Image (cartoon, rainbow, N blue to C red):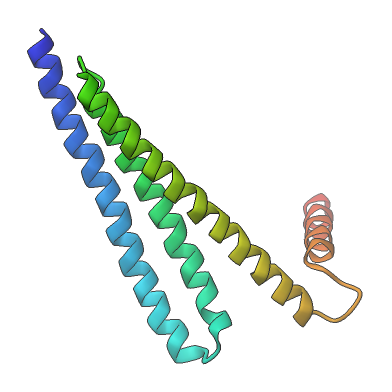
Length: 142
């Protein structure tokens, strides 16, 4: 019975690892295409910030899948060595995700600041969101 469980878990590990790799590959291709498009349309660095944000989100999601596969790998009768390896891998991936998340948040904040700077004075992105929400509610009522 334990052998069957190990075989099933091993198959699941491969599937989850493949999903993580697919997310990263799809994200890299998508970000590359957006990079090319942004390079043709915009010459400034600001045009590439959304590309970095997109790639960062795909990388973070892909890393989560990879971490899930590592957890699965040690789910059936793990040895102390496997637990130690999982702890090291989890720590490294958690640190990567943490800093990636911080960078995404910083880039997002910069994009919003740039957007607010480009708006006429007296309005902000939150003012615009409030206006959009109230206009959509009044449109639904009529």
